[in-house]
Length: 373
Image (cartoon, rainbow, N blue to C red; front, side, top):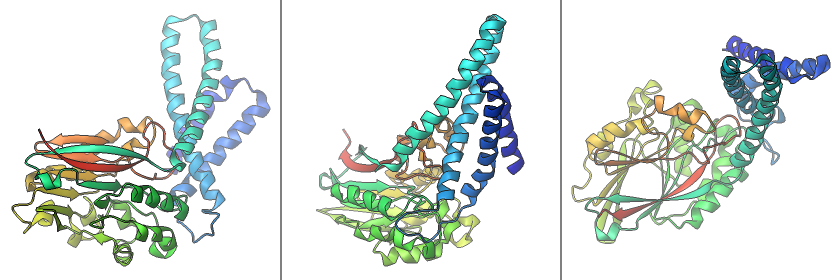
């Protein structure tokens, strides 16, 4: 992987640096910056969160992760430029194509820097609130308007710290939801490293409490320790199980499954939507499943759920990766349907890796159940 990463950096340098017309000194500086990027990116990918003061994560980690985001945009834009040059060579005189090479090289650099800066701003501000009404067939009148605040994929870790989590908690509490759902990938690091940064979740407030299901990153970070810690903070962790909420004169089932791939880490934790609904009251007015990955949907539909709340995809996080998520997950973002099952896939409330959100804004979602007409 390191060799492939190096080759991609060489490709960018060979295709852009000569075309920029910045002289030998400029090309040397550009080559050194690309070399630095190649060295830094693996540091960002393998960085473990450290216990840090209020200043946050290590400067080197910040630099590495920003470099990762910039490299991604540089690579994609360079590739698109080469396609454009190939087309231009077929239809344009050589002189015009030569001019276009210099202009387009500067456009690539400018576009990559712009996307990285704007993506950084979008990633670091508090997620917007998205309001979604989900029509449920035969929903009892008492459950009409029942609201769930969903957060997902916060990825508390090297660059997402306590102050970021406090902002999320404040925004969620302002929604005054009936229940709060955290649909996995909350952390990137151990309890020892991150407990103080996750602690603000104890301040989440909802009439029926806060519910959590594991994502794949919990298993990378020590799922058992995190399950224990979240329960200590007052969060209900659902491991292929459900709770019954009595709301007015109606019953609502809120169920949760372990991550779709949990069995690769612990066979006992195999994700099982049917087991999560076992012995649920037959007269429940609505049955909701919290499942980190959207690809739990077929089993959720077969089990008889009305709505599945998921995350995992980040909506692609930044362009153009939003177009590729669908090759790994059946749903990328927003509200979809599979038979009688509604699936809402959150774009995530934080970010993973590069502090960058471009074309896939983070969100806190307010789900409201409504009577289907």
